[in-house]
Image (cartoon, rainbow, N blue to C red; front, side, top):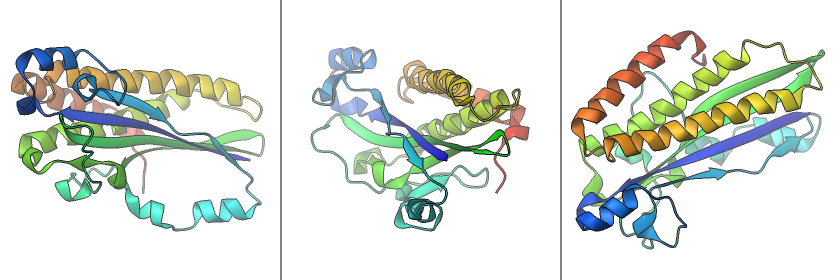
Length: 227
């Protein structure tokens, strides 16, 4: 069996100019339902688990090229996001959200010769990410790029954590417990980044995050996924 999981994080970039100061303060500390745009900052979405038999036709479809693969951008040290990668249409029912970055940690594992083999990958979903015309600025784009960089950083941290163990077939629950803990840390980090930088408005804090994440990526460089 192969287990395929995708954990998505939606980074919502608040349109600061569209909100009165007091409304911004309320939004800054909240993560509420989608129906309340003024309070929505960022939310976590979890995809359902897909269990696929490696001998089935479904598995062949999974590993073959398909339109969904075109939608994905795997994190690449030689590539920086552009606004052209944000291909979804802005949601009119979220008038105070300037941009959305959807980054994912995709992981899969299967049992072979008594051991669990696994892969962990950071990806960007183009068809679920969007930006309003007035938000297409270099500072906003750099802020969104760092969300993707943080996703890659935690993919590396997960690989580093998992490498400490020799998971056997039948130890899927233990494997999953490590994954859940690390994924929770990743999501908290993404939210902390928005909070601490005031959604890129605090240039000093944004610079600190830029430097720290870059250094952490170097620190975990040996755990970068090879092409």
